[in-house]
Length: 125
Image (tube, rainbow, N blue to C red; front, side, top):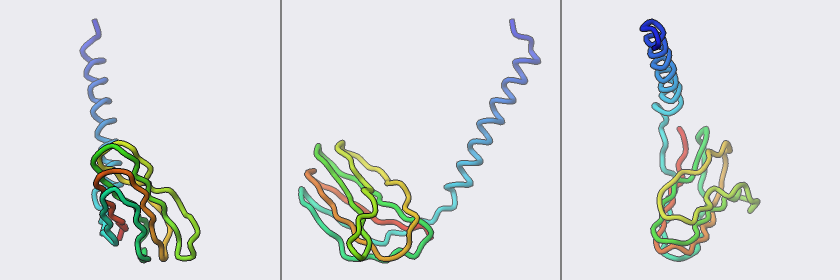
C-alpha cells in the first residue's frame, strides 16, 4: 500500500502538470483574433480565387466539406509561384491548415471531387 503522503504528493504534481499545460495552451490561443480575408464555396468543381492581401502576422486555410472525395487547396504568390499545399484531405469534415508566416498578395486554387466544400482564408491580426 502506498503511504498517504506519497499519494497526496503524486496528486498535487499531476494537478500542477495539467494546470501548467492548460496555461500554455491558453497563452497560445486564447487571445488569437482570426479575421476572414476571403471565402470560397463550391460543389464538385475546381476554383481559383482572385488575389487577396495578407497583412497580418500569420494566416491559415479553414476548410469543410461533405461527402467522400478529395479536397486540395494550393497556395500561390502573386507571381504564380507555388507556396504550399494547405489542404489535402479525402474524408468529410472540417479542419484548419498549418499557419503560413508570409505577408503579401496570394491566391488559392481549389481542386475538388467532393459534393460540397467551403474554405475561408483567415489572417491573425
